[in-house]
Image (cartoon, rainbow over the protein chains, first blue to last red):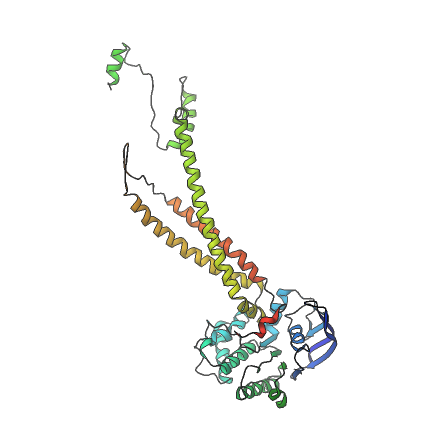
Length: 210
Length: 200
């Protein structure tokens, strides 16, 4: 079954000069696949990822995620779709520094409102312990190490059980030990939970592990 | 000054003679209505106090206008203060807003967050203002001011004034918070994703 289907994507930048970044891109990604988008800097990897993530809507072509055509949906519909179906891990963790680790992880699920608060809290604790963050739950997000923050960001991406997890250089800011941890987590998610993972990277170590 | 009986004797009039009857009513601002009511009951000339004292009346109206204009100006300036604070908060939090949106929060959620903040500022400010205002007024009430029958500055305590001031404050903070909140809600998480490449 395809988790993601891309047909004839074209993307232009008009600022500062007209530039055709993505030319007729088409591909399918099956469920449970672990895909890395690799390319040299400036080749449009991130641009492609932000189109796939539904955050950038200015393109020509067609994108379907999990059988839903996301091209042409309105901003608020896309926000709802992202909340439920897409998890995000960025190069920087982008946790909300004023909130505790647990609150950061719970936030997307509280927005989705499919489960009660206690159930969400329970799931968040479980995810954090899977990611080796026992005992950090009630610390502020700004008070833990960079590798831990990135794992919290992964937990946050996973809380709603998204079909696709997207990473923009998810290990770009980590040392090789933490890179390996993050990579192992991703591989386990793809294998055990059947979650699709799409990551942009120029990190050789990450690439070599694939 | 002489008594009315002596006056009648001096004018050699009988016991029912009077040139003028002054009526004291409970609320001076109702004089015109009472006068027109009375004029239907009698053939004599009935005149509200405003007709004979139009200067005093217009001074009163003018004073009220100035009082309202001054308090409105202060409220609007305070409103701009809140608008500025909220605008700065929105600019500071652009990245957080974009993260929330990337996670699936929509424009309405963002508006809610920022409106909550500004209304909380409004509530706290409003209540503090009422308490402080009441304290200052009671001090003003004791400032000596000797004119005619007054010994201190005249102060009127009316609950309705406090309620109106509070409601107005809330409305102003609501408006001053709504505009930046709407701006925040329009931040596009993907259209300009250069921020995603920067460190927190």
